[in-house]
Image 1 (cartoon, one colour):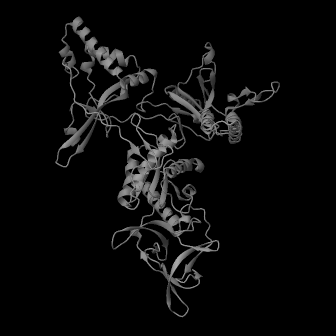
Image 2 (cartoon, rainbow, N blue to C red; image 1 turned 90 degrees about the vertical axis):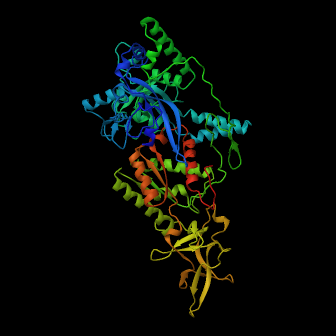
Image 3 (cartoon, rainbow, N blue to C red; image 1 turned 90 degrees about the horizontal axis):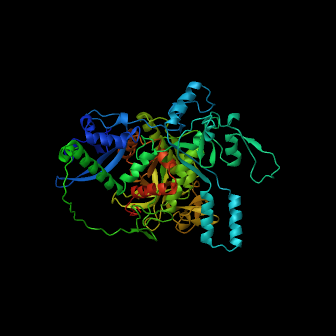
Length: 637
Protein backbone atom coordinates (compact mmCIF):
# COMPACT_ATOMS: atom_id res chain seq x y z
CA UNK A 1 0.00 0.00 0.00
CA UNK A 2 2.83 2.38 0.84
CA UNK A 3 4.48 1.71 -2.49
CA UNK A 4 1.24 2.28 -4.38
CA UNK A 5 0.44 5.50 -2.55
CA UNK A 6 3.94 6.85 -3.04
CA UNK A 7 4.14 6.20 -6.76
CA UNK A 8 5.62 9.10 -8.66
CA UNK A 9 3.02 8.69 -11.41
CA UNK A 10 -0.17 7.06 -10.19
CA UNK A 11 -1.52 6.36 -13.71
CA UNK A 12 1.32 3.85 -14.30
CA UNK A 13 0.33 0.22 -14.78
CA UNK A 14 2.13 -3.00 -13.94
CA UNK A 15 2.39 -6.52 -15.30
CA UNK A 16 1.85 -9.54 -13.04
CA UNK A 17 1.29 -9.86 -9.31
CA UNK A 18 4.81 -8.85 -8.19
CA UNK A 19 5.80 -6.04 -10.54
CA UNK A 20 9.34 -4.74 -10.71
CA UNK A 21 8.58 -2.14 -13.35
CA UNK A 22 5.67 0.18 -14.09
CA UNK A 23 4.60 1.49 -17.48
CA UNK A 24 2.46 4.20 -19.02
CA UNK A 25 -0.93 2.70 -19.85
CA UNK A 26 -1.71 1.83 -23.45
CA UNK A 27 -4.27 4.37 -24.63
CA UNK A 28 -6.11 3.64 -27.93
CA UNK A 29 -7.03 7.32 -28.16
CA UNK A 30 -3.39 8.39 -27.97
CA UNK A 31 -2.34 5.72 -30.45
CA UNK A 32 -4.84 7.13 -32.90
CA UNK A 33 -3.34 10.61 -32.84
CA UNK A 34 -0.83 11.77 -35.44
CA UNK A 35 2.19 11.46 -33.17
CA UNK A 36 0.89 8.13 -31.92
CA UNK A 37 0.77 6.88 -35.51
CA UNK A 38 4.39 7.96 -35.99
CA UNK A 39 5.43 5.96 -32.91
CA UNK A 40 3.41 3.05 -34.25
CA UNK A 41 5.34 3.19 -37.53
CA UNK A 42 8.69 3.48 -35.73
CA UNK A 43 8.23 0.55 -33.39
CA UNK A 44 5.28 -1.74 -34.02
CA UNK A 45 5.49 -2.02 -37.80
CA UNK A 46 9.29 -2.15 -37.81
CA UNK A 47 9.63 -4.80 -35.13
CA UNK A 48 6.87 -7.19 -36.02
CA UNK A 49 5.28 -8.86 -33.01
CA UNK A 50 7.35 -7.10 -30.34
CA UNK A 51 6.85 -3.74 -28.68
CA UNK A 52 9.32 -1.87 -26.41
CA UNK A 53 7.85 -0.38 -23.24
CA UNK A 54 9.86 2.19 -21.34
CA UNK A 55 8.99 2.29 -17.68
CA UNK A 56 10.36 3.01 -14.24
CA UNK A 57 11.65 0.76 -11.50
CA UNK A 58 11.02 1.99 -8.00
CA UNK A 59 12.26 0.77 -4.62
CA UNK A 60 10.97 1.98 -1.28
CA UNK A 61 12.73 2.05 2.10
CA UNK A 62 11.15 2.96 5.43
CA UNK A 63 13.19 5.33 7.60
CA UNK A 64 13.32 5.22 11.40
CA UNK A 65 11.54 8.58 11.66
CA UNK A 66 8.50 7.26 9.77
CA UNK A 67 9.39 8.80 6.42
CA UNK A 68 10.05 6.83 3.24
CA UNK A 69 12.96 6.93 0.85
CA UNK A 70 12.30 6.30 -2.86
CA UNK A 71 14.85 5.14 -5.43
CA UNK A 72 13.66 5.46 -9.02
CA UNK A 73 15.34 4.52 -12.30
CA UNK A 74 14.30 4.01 -15.90
CA UNK A 75 14.08 0.62 -17.57
CA UNK A 76 13.06 -1.18 -20.74
CA UNK A 77 10.95 -4.30 -21.22
CA UNK A 78 9.63 -6.08 -24.29
CA UNK A 79 6.06 -7.27 -24.73
CA UNK A 80 4.21 -9.36 -27.23
CA UNK A 81 1.63 -7.15 -28.92
CA UNK A 82 -1.08 -9.48 -27.63
CA UNK A 83 0.26 -9.24 -24.06
CA UNK A 84 1.07 -5.57 -23.56
CA UNK A 85 0.61 -4.04 -20.08
CA UNK A 86 -3.13 -3.91 -19.38
CA UNK A 87 -5.07 -0.65 -19.47
CA UNK A 88 -7.12 -1.63 -16.44
CA UNK A 89 -6.42 -2.93 -12.95
CA UNK A 90 -6.89 -6.51 -14.14
CA UNK A 91 -3.48 -8.14 -14.31
CA UNK A 92 -2.50 -10.49 -17.11
CA UNK A 93 -0.68 -13.79 -16.65
CA UNK A 94 2.99 -13.85 -17.76
CA UNK A 95 3.76 -15.10 -21.24
CA UNK A 96 4.83 -18.81 -21.12
CA UNK A 97 8.50 -19.57 -21.76
CA UNK A 98 9.39 -22.09 -24.49
CA UNK A 99 12.34 -24.34 -23.67
CA UNK A 100 13.98 -26.39 -26.42
CA UNK A 101 14.47 -29.72 -24.61
CA UNK A 102 13.23 -30.02 -21.06
CA UNK A 103 14.18 -33.39 -19.60
CA UNK A 104 12.11 -33.02 -16.43
CA UNK A 105 8.91 -32.16 -18.28
CA UNK A 106 9.58 -34.36 -21.29
CA UNK A 107 9.10 -31.56 -23.82
CA UNK A 108 10.76 -30.10 -26.92
CA UNK A 109 9.93 -26.43 -27.44
CA UNK A 110 7.01 -26.91 -25.09
CA UNK A 111 5.62 -29.94 -27.00
CA UNK A 112 5.27 -33.14 -24.93
CA UNK A 113 7.25 -36.08 -26.33
CA UNK A 114 8.65 -39.43 -25.23
CA UNK A 115 12.37 -38.67 -24.92
CA UNK A 116 13.34 -42.37 -24.94
CA UNK A 117 12.30 -43.16 -28.53
CA UNK A 118 12.25 -41.47 -31.95
CA UNK A 119 9.36 -39.13 -32.77
CA UNK A 120 7.24 -40.72 -35.50
CA UNK A 121 3.85 -39.06 -35.03
CA UNK A 122 3.38 -36.56 -37.94
CA UNK A 123 1.17 -34.35 -35.78
CA UNK A 124 3.80 -34.04 -33.03
CA UNK A 125 6.51 -33.43 -35.64
CA UNK A 126 4.46 -30.61 -37.13
CA UNK A 127 3.87 -29.04 -33.71
CA UNK A 128 7.58 -29.17 -32.88
CA UNK A 129 8.63 -27.70 -36.22
CA UNK A 130 6.08 -24.91 -35.84
CA UNK A 131 7.27 -24.15 -32.27
CA UNK A 132 10.96 -24.18 -33.27
CA UNK A 133 10.16 -21.87 -36.17
CA UNK A 134 9.12 -19.19 -33.69
CA UNK A 135 12.36 -19.32 -31.71
CA UNK A 136 15.72 -17.67 -31.96
CA UNK A 137 18.24 -20.09 -30.52
CA UNK A 138 21.92 -20.74 -29.87
CA UNK A 139 23.84 -23.95 -30.55
CA UNK A 140 26.61 -24.83 -28.14
CA UNK A 141 28.67 -27.85 -27.23
CA UNK A 142 31.97 -28.29 -25.38
CA UNK A 143 34.42 -31.05 -26.29
CA UNK A 144 36.32 -32.66 -23.40
CA UNK A 145 39.99 -31.79 -23.12
CA UNK A 146 42.46 -34.17 -24.76
CA UNK A 147 44.65 -34.59 -21.68
CA UNK A 148 47.37 -36.62 -23.39
CA UNK A 149 47.67 -34.15 -26.26
CA UNK A 150 47.68 -31.24 -23.82
CA UNK A 151 50.48 -32.78 -21.75
CA UNK A 152 52.49 -33.47 -24.91
CA UNK A 153 52.16 -29.83 -25.96
CA UNK A 154 53.19 -28.66 -22.50
CA UNK A 155 56.30 -30.81 -22.65
CA UNK A 156 57.16 -29.56 -26.12
CA UNK A 157 56.77 -25.92 -25.15
CA UNK A 158 58.71 -26.49 -21.93
CA UNK A 159 61.55 -28.11 -23.87
CA UNK A 160 61.58 -25.10 -26.21
CA UNK A 161 61.87 -22.83 -23.14
CA UNK A 162 58.55 -21.13 -23.68
CA UNK A 163 57.75 -18.93 -20.61
CA UNK A 164 55.28 -20.37 -18.11
CA UNK A 165 52.80 -17.50 -18.62
CA UNK A 166 52.86 -18.07 -22.37
CA UNK A 167 52.28 -21.83 -21.88
CA UNK A 168 49.31 -21.08 -19.66
CA UNK A 169 47.94 -18.72 -22.31
CA UNK A 170 48.36 -21.33 -25.06
CA UNK A 171 46.61 -24.00 -23.01
CA UNK A 172 43.75 -21.61 -22.32
CA UNK A 173 43.43 -20.89 -26.05
CA UNK A 174 43.37 -24.62 -26.86
CA UNK A 175 40.59 -25.22 -24.34
CA UNK A 176 38.55 -22.31 -25.67
CA UNK A 177 38.65 -23.91 -29.11
CA UNK A 178 36.86 -26.91 -27.61
CA UNK A 179 33.72 -24.79 -27.34
CA UNK A 180 31.56 -24.46 -30.45
CA UNK A 181 28.95 -21.71 -30.29
CA UNK A 182 26.57 -20.39 -32.94
CA UNK A 183 24.44 -17.47 -31.78
CA UNK A 184 20.98 -16.24 -32.74
CA UNK A 185 19.99 -18.86 -35.31
CA UNK A 186 16.58 -19.53 -36.82
CA UNK A 187 15.06 -22.71 -38.19
CA UNK A 188 15.71 -22.75 -41.96
CA UNK A 189 12.96 -23.74 -44.37
CA UNK A 190 13.74 -26.31 -47.04
CA UNK A 191 13.76 -24.90 -50.57
CA UNK A 192 14.20 -26.72 -53.88
CA UNK A 193 15.61 -23.59 -55.55
CA UNK A 194 17.80 -22.00 -52.88
CA UNK A 195 21.22 -23.77 -52.76
CA UNK A 196 21.69 -23.34 -48.99
CA UNK A 197 18.17 -24.37 -48.06
CA UNK A 198 18.09 -27.85 -49.61
CA UNK A 199 18.86 -29.67 -46.38
CA UNK A 200 16.07 -30.99 -44.18
CA UNK A 201 15.63 -28.39 -41.40
CA UNK A 202 15.04 -31.24 -38.91
CA UNK A 203 16.08 -34.89 -38.96
CA UNK A 204 13.96 -36.71 -36.45
CA UNK A 205 16.43 -39.30 -35.18
CA UNK A 206 20.04 -38.22 -34.57
CA UNK A 207 21.09 -41.89 -34.55
CA UNK A 208 19.12 -42.82 -37.68
CA UNK A 209 20.21 -43.13 -41.28
CA UNK A 210 18.42 -39.92 -42.25
CA UNK A 211 21.04 -38.00 -40.25
CA UNK A 212 24.01 -39.90 -41.75
CA UNK A 213 26.80 -38.32 -43.79
CA UNK A 214 30.18 -39.38 -45.19
CA UNK A 215 33.36 -38.26 -43.46
CA UNK A 216 37.02 -39.14 -43.65
CA UNK A 217 38.65 -39.26 -40.22
CA UNK A 218 41.25 -36.60 -39.49
CA UNK A 219 44.77 -37.95 -39.99
CA UNK A 220 43.64 -40.82 -42.22
CA UNK A 221 45.53 -41.39 -45.52
CA UNK A 222 44.06 -39.62 -48.54
CA UNK A 223 43.34 -42.93 -50.22
CA UNK A 224 41.41 -44.19 -47.21
CA UNK A 225 37.67 -44.48 -47.86
CA UNK A 226 35.18 -42.22 -46.11
CA UNK A 227 33.09 -43.56 -43.27
CA UNK A 228 29.36 -43.25 -42.72
CA UNK A 229 28.52 -41.30 -39.56
CA UNK A 230 25.19 -40.50 -38.00
CA UNK A 231 24.96 -37.33 -35.92
CA UNK A 232 24.97 -39.39 -32.71
CA UNK A 233 27.99 -41.46 -33.80
CA UNK A 234 29.90 -38.33 -34.87
CA UNK A 235 29.37 -36.75 -31.44
CA UNK A 236 30.27 -40.01 -29.67
CA UNK A 237 33.42 -41.00 -31.61
CA UNK A 238 34.79 -37.77 -33.10
CA UNK A 239 33.81 -35.12 -30.56
CA UNK A 240 33.85 -37.53 -27.57
CA UNK A 241 30.45 -36.22 -26.45
CA UNK A 242 27.94 -39.03 -25.78
CA UNK A 243 24.39 -37.84 -26.42
CA UNK A 244 21.84 -38.31 -23.65
CA UNK A 245 18.96 -38.29 -26.14
CA UNK A 246 20.44 -39.86 -29.27
CA UNK A 247 16.99 -40.73 -30.67
CA UNK A 248 15.80 -37.13 -30.50
CA UNK A 249 15.84 -34.72 -33.48
CA UNK A 250 18.81 -32.81 -34.89
CA UNK A 251 18.38 -29.28 -36.29
CA UNK A 252 20.15 -27.95 -39.39
CA UNK A 253 22.23 -24.83 -38.69
CA UNK A 254 24.31 -22.77 -41.11
CA UNK A 255 26.93 -20.32 -39.87
CA UNK A 256 29.12 -18.93 -42.63
CA UNK A 257 30.85 -21.90 -44.24
CA UNK A 258 29.94 -24.20 -41.38
CA UNK A 259 26.70 -26.11 -41.70
CA UNK A 260 25.23 -29.35 -40.45
CA UNK A 261 22.66 -30.98 -38.23
CA UNK A 262 23.13 -30.56 -34.49
CA UNK A 263 21.39 -32.51 -31.68
CA UNK A 264 18.43 -30.81 -30.08
CA UNK A 265 20.10 -31.17 -26.66
CA UNK A 266 22.85 -28.78 -27.85
CA UNK A 267 20.31 -26.09 -28.73
CA UNK A 268 18.79 -23.61 -26.31
CA UNK A 269 16.55 -20.61 -26.69
CA UNK A 270 18.18 -17.19 -26.99
CA UNK A 271 16.87 -14.70 -24.45
CA UNK A 272 17.28 -10.95 -24.33
CA UNK A 273 16.15 -8.41 -21.78
CA UNK A 274 13.08 -10.53 -21.12
CA UNK A 275 12.73 -14.24 -21.68
CA UNK A 276 9.24 -13.70 -23.13
CA UNK A 277 10.48 -12.38 -26.47
CA UNK A 278 12.52 -13.56 -29.41
CA UNK A 279 15.53 -11.31 -29.69
CA UNK A 280 15.50 -10.43 -33.37
CA UNK A 281 17.96 -7.92 -34.79
CA UNK A 282 15.57 -4.99 -34.31
CA UNK A 283 15.08 -5.78 -30.63
CA UNK A 284 18.82 -6.19 -29.99
CA UNK A 285 19.55 -2.94 -31.83
CA UNK A 286 16.94 -1.04 -29.85
CA UNK A 287 18.28 -2.46 -26.56
CA UNK A 288 21.78 -1.24 -27.44
CA UNK A 289 20.48 2.21 -28.33
CA UNK A 290 18.40 2.49 -25.18
CA UNK A 291 21.40 1.54 -23.03
CA UNK A 292 23.59 4.28 -24.56
CA UNK A 293 23.57 7.98 -25.28
CA UNK A 294 21.81 7.21 -28.55
CA UNK A 295 18.54 7.35 -26.66
CA UNK A 296 19.02 11.14 -26.53
CA UNK A 297 19.02 11.11 -30.32
CA UNK A 298 15.76 9.17 -30.24
CA UNK A 299 14.24 11.90 -28.09
CA UNK A 300 15.35 14.52 -30.57
CA UNK A 301 13.88 12.52 -33.46
CA UNK A 302 10.52 12.35 -31.72
CA UNK A 303 10.69 16.06 -30.93
CA UNK A 304 11.44 16.95 -34.56
CA UNK A 305 8.59 14.72 -35.70
CA UNK A 306 6.29 16.46 -33.25
CA UNK A 307 7.38 19.86 -34.61
CA UNK A 308 6.71 18.67 -38.17
CA UNK A 309 3.28 17.44 -37.15
CA UNK A 310 2.65 20.81 -35.55
CA UNK A 311 3.49 22.62 -38.81
CA UNK A 312 1.59 20.23 -41.05
CA UNK A 313 -1.55 19.83 -38.97
CA UNK A 314 -1.60 23.18 -37.20
CA UNK A 315 -1.63 21.40 -33.88
CA UNK A 316 0.24 22.88 -30.95
CA UNK A 317 3.23 20.97 -29.58
CA UNK A 318 1.96 21.34 -26.01
CA UNK A 319 -1.32 19.73 -27.02
CA UNK A 320 0.49 16.83 -28.65
CA UNK A 321 2.80 16.21 -25.69
CA UNK A 322 -0.11 16.46 -23.30
CA UNK A 323 -1.51 13.33 -24.93
CA UNK A 324 1.50 11.51 -23.44
CA UNK A 325 1.33 13.29 -20.08
CA UNK A 326 4.50 15.25 -21.00
CA UNK A 327 5.44 18.92 -20.89
CA UNK A 328 8.18 20.65 -22.89
CA UNK A 329 10.62 23.30 -21.69
CA UNK A 330 13.48 25.00 -23.48
CA UNK A 331 15.21 25.87 -20.20
CA UNK A 332 18.26 23.72 -19.44
CA UNK A 333 18.13 21.54 -16.35
CA UNK A 334 20.97 22.07 -13.87
CA UNK A 335 21.91 19.29 -11.47
CA UNK A 336 24.45 19.37 -8.65
CA UNK A 337 26.33 16.12 -8.09
CA UNK A 338 29.40 14.81 -6.27
CA UNK A 339 31.83 12.42 -7.92
CA UNK A 340 32.56 9.63 -5.43
CA UNK A 341 35.91 7.92 -5.19
CA UNK A 342 36.02 4.47 -6.68
CA UNK A 343 36.01 1.87 -3.87
CA UNK A 344 38.81 -0.64 -3.41
CA UNK A 345 37.84 -4.22 -2.52
CA UNK A 346 40.38 -5.82 -0.16
CA UNK A 347 40.82 -9.60 -0.19
CA UNK A 348 43.19 -11.71 1.89
CA UNK A 349 46.38 -10.88 0.02
CA UNK A 350 45.22 -8.71 -2.88
CA UNK A 351 42.88 -5.85 -3.64
CA UNK A 352 40.65 -5.09 -6.60
CA UNK A 353 39.04 -2.03 -8.14
CA UNK A 354 35.61 -2.56 -9.72
CA UNK A 355 35.48 -2.28 -13.50
CA UNK A 356 32.09 -1.34 -14.97
CA UNK A 357 30.40 -2.15 -11.69
CA UNK A 358 31.91 -5.61 -11.16
CA UNK A 359 35.19 -7.13 -10.05
CA UNK A 360 37.10 -10.30 -10.78
CA UNK A 361 36.85 -12.94 -8.04
CA UNK A 362 39.03 -15.55 -9.71
CA UNK A 363 41.94 -16.96 -7.69
CA UNK A 364 41.36 -14.71 -4.66
CA UNK A 365 40.90 -15.72 -1.05
CA UNK A 366 38.37 -13.89 1.08
CA UNK A 367 39.84 -11.61 3.74
CA UNK A 368 37.86 -13.38 6.49
CA UNK A 369 36.67 -16.76 5.21
CA UNK A 370 33.98 -18.56 7.18
CA UNK A 371 33.87 -22.18 8.38
CA UNK A 372 31.30 -24.61 7.04
CA UNK A 373 31.19 -27.42 9.57
CA UNK A 374 28.34 -29.38 7.96
CA UNK A 375 25.79 -29.13 5.19
CA UNK A 376 22.78 -30.73 3.52
CA UNK A 377 21.90 -31.04 -0.18
CA UNK A 378 18.45 -30.73 -1.81
CA UNK A 379 17.91 -30.92 -5.57
CA UNK A 380 14.61 -29.89 -7.19
CA UNK A 381 16.05 -30.47 -10.69
CA UNK A 382 17.32 -34.03 -10.25
CA UNK A 383 17.40 -36.29 -13.31
CA UNK A 384 18.26 -39.92 -13.85
CA UNK A 385 21.91 -38.99 -14.35
CA UNK A 386 23.30 -38.68 -10.81
CA UNK A 387 26.80 -37.70 -11.94
CA UNK A 388 25.39 -34.79 -13.92
CA UNK A 389 23.22 -33.72 -10.98
CA UNK A 390 26.20 -33.74 -8.60
CA UNK A 391 28.44 -31.63 -10.88
CA UNK A 392 27.01 -28.17 -9.97
CA UNK A 393 27.40 -28.85 -6.24
CA UNK A 394 30.94 -30.18 -6.71
CA UNK A 395 31.86 -27.12 -8.78
CA UNK A 396 30.43 -24.79 -6.12
CA UNK A 397 32.31 -26.52 -3.31
CA UNK A 398 35.55 -26.41 -5.29
CA UNK A 399 35.18 -22.65 -5.83
CA UNK A 400 34.25 -22.07 -2.17
CA UNK A 401 37.40 -23.91 -1.08
CA UNK A 402 39.53 -21.81 -3.46
CA UNK A 403 38.16 -18.68 -1.78
CA UNK A 404 39.32 -19.99 1.59
CA UNK A 405 36.00 -21.16 3.08
CA UNK A 406 36.91 -23.92 5.52
CA UNK A 407 35.30 -27.26 4.65
CA UNK A 408 34.21 -29.88 7.23
CA UNK A 409 37.22 -31.50 8.84
CA UNK A 410 38.69 -34.87 7.84
CA UNK A 411 36.22 -35.58 5.02
CA UNK A 412 36.17 -34.96 1.30
CA UNK A 413 33.29 -32.52 1.05
CA UNK A 414 32.74 -33.21 -2.65
CA UNK A 415 32.47 -36.95 -1.99
CA UNK A 416 30.14 -36.31 0.93
CA UNK A 417 27.70 -34.63 -1.48
CA UNK A 418 26.85 -38.07 -2.87
CA UNK A 419 25.86 -39.39 0.57
CA UNK A 420 23.86 -36.28 1.45
CA UNK A 421 22.10 -35.82 -1.90
CA UNK A 422 18.28 -35.72 -1.61
CA UNK A 423 16.10 -35.35 -4.70
CA UNK A 424 12.83 -33.42 -4.39
CA UNK A 425 10.49 -34.91 -6.97
CA UNK A 426 7.59 -32.47 -6.64
CA UNK A 427 7.10 -28.75 -5.89
CA UNK A 428 4.16 -29.66 -3.65
CA UNK A 429 4.63 -28.10 -0.17
CA UNK A 430 4.08 -31.44 1.58
CA UNK A 431 6.78 -33.06 -0.56
CA UNK A 432 9.18 -30.14 -0.03
CA UNK A 433 8.73 -30.32 3.74
CA UNK A 434 9.19 -34.11 3.80
CA UNK A 435 12.36 -34.04 1.69
CA UNK A 436 13.76 -31.06 3.59
CA UNK A 437 13.41 -32.92 6.89
CA UNK A 438 14.93 -36.00 5.24
CA UNK A 439 17.90 -33.89 4.15
CA UNK A 440 18.41 -32.58 7.70
CA UNK A 441 18.18 -36.10 9.13
CA UNK A 442 20.64 -37.43 6.57
CA UNK A 443 23.11 -34.65 7.44
CA UNK A 444 22.76 -35.39 11.16
CA UNK A 445 23.33 -39.10 10.55
CA UNK A 446 26.37 -38.38 8.40
CA UNK A 447 28.10 -35.85 10.63
CA UNK A 448 26.89 -36.83 14.12
CA UNK A 449 25.85 -40.48 14.25
CA UNK A 450 28.38 -41.99 11.84
CA UNK A 451 25.78 -44.24 10.21
CA UNK A 452 26.35 -43.66 6.51
CA UNK A 453 30.06 -42.90 6.24
CA UNK A 454 33.58 -43.89 7.23
CA UNK A 455 33.98 -40.46 8.82
CA UNK A 456 36.28 -41.17 11.77
CA UNK A 457 36.92 -37.92 13.59
CA UNK A 458 34.07 -36.60 15.75
CA UNK A 459 31.98 -33.75 14.40
CA UNK A 460 33.89 -30.46 14.65
CA UNK A 461 31.71 -27.40 15.13
CA UNK A 462 30.95 -24.37 17.28
CA UNK A 463 29.32 -25.21 20.60
CA UNK A 464 27.48 -22.66 22.73
CA UNK A 465 28.26 -22.58 26.45
CA UNK A 466 24.82 -22.82 28.08
CA UNK A 467 25.88 -20.62 31.01
CA UNK A 468 27.89 -17.83 29.34
CA UNK A 469 26.61 -17.96 25.75
CA UNK A 470 30.20 -18.11 24.51
CA UNK A 471 30.87 -20.10 21.33
CA UNK A 472 33.76 -22.56 21.43
CA UNK A 473 35.22 -24.66 18.63
CA UNK A 474 34.81 -28.22 19.87
CA UNK A 475 34.23 -31.82 18.85
CA UNK A 476 30.78 -33.31 19.34
CA UNK A 477 30.01 -37.02 19.43
CA UNK A 478 26.83 -39.05 19.72
CA UNK A 479 26.47 -40.86 23.03
CA UNK A 480 23.25 -42.75 23.65
CA UNK A 481 19.52 -42.09 23.99
CA UNK A 482 19.84 -39.19 21.52
CA UNK A 483 22.42 -37.50 23.77
CA UNK A 484 25.67 -35.87 22.69
CA UNK A 485 28.87 -35.05 24.47
CA UNK A 486 31.51 -32.44 23.75
CA UNK A 487 35.30 -32.65 23.60
CA UNK A 488 36.84 -29.27 24.49
CA UNK A 489 40.42 -28.12 23.79
CA UNK A 490 42.78 -29.37 26.50
CA UNK A 491 43.66 -25.77 27.32
CA UNK A 492 40.08 -25.31 28.56
CA UNK A 493 39.34 -28.76 29.94
CA UNK A 494 41.77 -31.66 30.09
CA UNK A 495 39.37 -34.53 30.80
CA UNK A 496 36.75 -35.73 28.31
CA UNK A 497 35.57 -38.96 30.01
CA UNK A 498 35.36 -40.64 33.37
CA UNK A 499 36.50 -44.28 33.39
CA UNK A 500 35.28 -46.75 36.03
CA UNK A 501 38.22 -48.96 37.06
CA UNK A 502 37.87 -52.65 38.02
CA UNK A 503 38.15 -51.76 41.72
CA UNK A 504 35.23 -49.31 41.40
CA UNK A 505 37.34 -46.18 41.50
CA UNK A 506 36.94 -43.46 38.87
CA UNK A 507 39.66 -41.88 36.77
CA UNK A 508 39.44 -38.88 34.47
CA UNK A 509 40.91 -39.50 31.00
CA UNK A 510 41.15 -37.77 27.62
CA UNK A 511 39.79 -39.10 24.35
CA UNK A 512 42.71 -39.42 21.90
CA UNK A 513 43.39 -40.74 18.39
CA UNK A 514 46.09 -43.24 17.47
CA UNK A 515 48.01 -42.37 14.28
CA UNK A 516 50.62 -45.00 13.51
CA UNK A 517 52.19 -45.63 16.92
CA UNK A 518 51.59 -42.11 18.19
CA UNK A 519 48.77 -40.93 20.46
CA UNK A 520 47.49 -37.61 19.02
CA UNK A 521 45.09 -35.04 20.44
CA UNK A 522 42.03 -34.42 18.26
CA UNK A 523 42.86 -30.70 18.10
CA UNK A 524 46.28 -31.40 16.56
CA UNK A 525 46.78 -29.16 13.51
CA UNK A 526 47.66 -32.16 11.37
CA UNK A 527 43.99 -33.13 11.27
CA UNK A 528 42.94 -29.81 9.75
CA UNK A 529 44.17 -30.72 6.28
CA UNK A 530 42.85 -34.28 6.44
CA UNK A 531 44.40 -37.32 4.83
CA UNK A 532 45.74 -38.69 8.16
CA UNK A 533 44.71 -42.27 8.88
CA UNK A 534 43.41 -43.02 12.38
CA UNK A 535 43.76 -46.64 13.44
CA UNK A 536 41.71 -46.39 16.65
CA UNK A 537 40.58 -44.16 19.54
CA UNK A 538 41.88 -44.61 23.09
CA UNK A 539 41.59 -43.09 26.56
CA UNK A 540 44.77 -41.48 27.88
CA UNK A 541 45.44 -41.11 31.60
CA UNK A 542 47.23 -38.05 33.00
CA UNK A 543 50.46 -40.10 33.30
CA UNK A 544 50.41 -40.89 29.56
CA UNK A 545 49.21 -44.51 29.78
CA UNK A 546 46.35 -45.51 27.44
CA UNK A 547 43.56 -48.08 27.33
CA UNK A 548 41.09 -49.01 24.61
CA UNK A 549 37.77 -47.23 24.78
CA UNK A 550 35.94 -50.55 25.07
CA UNK A 551 38.16 -51.93 27.85
CA UNK A 552 36.35 -50.32 30.81
CA UNK A 553 33.00 -48.69 31.34
CA UNK A 554 33.05 -44.94 30.83
CA UNK A 555 30.82 -41.92 30.60
CA UNK A 556 31.34 -38.54 28.94
CA UNK A 557 32.59 -35.74 31.10
CA UNK A 558 30.34 -33.06 29.58
CA UNK A 559 26.92 -33.70 27.99
CA UNK A 560 25.45 -31.02 25.71
CA UNK A 561 21.94 -30.53 24.43
CA UNK A 562 21.05 -30.54 20.75
CA UNK A 563 20.34 -26.78 20.63
CA UNK A 564 23.90 -25.95 21.69
CA UNK A 565 25.35 -26.74 18.26
CA UNK A 566 24.11 -26.59 14.69
CA UNK A 567 24.02 -29.42 12.18
CA UNK A 568 23.83 -28.77 9.34
CA UNK A 569 25.33 -25.29 9.12
CA UNK A 570 23.64 -24.60 5.80
CA UNK A 571 21.39 -26.33 3.25
CA UNK A 572 22.28 -26.04 -0.44
CA UNK A 573 19.22 -26.09 -2.71
CA UNK A 574 19.22 -26.35 -6.50
CA UNK A 575 15.90 -25.12 -7.90
CA UNK A 576 14.51 -26.20 -11.26
CA UNK A 577 13.44 -22.66 -12.14
CA UNK A 578 12.85 -19.29 -10.47
CA UNK A 579 9.35 -20.15 -9.24
CA UNK A 580 8.75 -17.70 -6.38
CA UNK A 581 6.32 -19.97 -4.52
CA UNK A 582 8.80 -22.84 -4.30
CA UNK A 583 11.61 -20.48 -3.26
CA UNK A 584 9.49 -18.83 -0.56
CA UNK A 585 8.40 -22.17 0.89
CA UNK A 586 12.00 -23.42 0.98
CA UNK A 587 12.97 -20.30 2.93
CA UNK A 588 9.99 -20.80 5.26
CA UNK A 589 10.99 -24.38 6.06
CA UNK A 590 14.69 -23.55 6.46
CA UNK A 591 14.74 -20.16 8.19
CA UNK A 592 11.49 -20.12 10.16
CA UNK A 593 10.61 -23.73 10.94
CA UNK A 594 14.10 -25.23 11.36
CA UNK A 595 16.26 -22.14 11.97
CA UNK A 596 18.96 -23.21 9.52
CA UNK A 597 20.60 -21.16 6.77
CA UNK A 598 19.94 -22.07 3.15
CA UNK A 599 21.51 -21.09 -0.16
CA UNK A 600 19.53 -21.52 -3.37
CA UNK A 601 20.63 -21.39 -6.99
CA UNK A 602 18.69 -22.05 -10.20
CA UNK A 603 19.59 -24.82 -12.63
CA UNK A 604 18.90 -22.83 -15.80
CA UNK A 605 20.92 -19.84 -14.60
CA UNK A 606 23.90 -22.04 -13.70
CA UNK A 607 23.83 -23.97 -16.97
CA UNK A 608 23.47 -20.75 -18.96
CA UNK A 609 26.73 -19.30 -17.62
CA UNK A 610 29.79 -19.13 -19.85
CA UNK A 611 31.93 -18.53 -16.75
CA UNK A 612 30.56 -20.93 -14.16
CA UNK A 613 33.43 -20.19 -11.75
CA UNK A 614 32.40 -16.53 -11.55
CA UNK A 615 28.76 -17.55 -10.96
CA UNK A 616 29.86 -19.90 -8.16
CA UNK A 617 32.03 -17.12 -6.71
CA UNK A 618 28.96 -14.91 -6.42
CA UNK A 619 27.22 -17.71 -4.53
CA UNK A 620 30.32 -18.22 -2.36
CA UNK A 621 30.11 -14.57 -1.24
CA UNK A 622 26.56 -15.17 -0.02
CA UNK A 623 27.54 -18.42 1.70
CA UNK A 624 30.47 -16.74 3.45
CA UNK A 625 28.13 -14.06 4.78
CA UNK A 626 25.49 -16.54 5.93
CA UNK A 627 28.08 -18.61 7.82
CA UNK A 628 29.12 -15.53 9.81
CA UNK A 629 29.92 -16.26 13.46
CA UNK A 630 31.49 -14.41 16.36
CA UNK A 631 34.49 -16.72 16.17
CA UNK A 632 35.32 -16.39 12.46
CA UNK A 633 34.15 -12.77 12.20
CA UNK A 634 33.39 -13.52 8.57
CA UNK A 635 32.08 -11.01 6.07
CA UNK A 636 31.00 -11.11 2.42
CA UNK A 637 34.60 -11.32 1.15
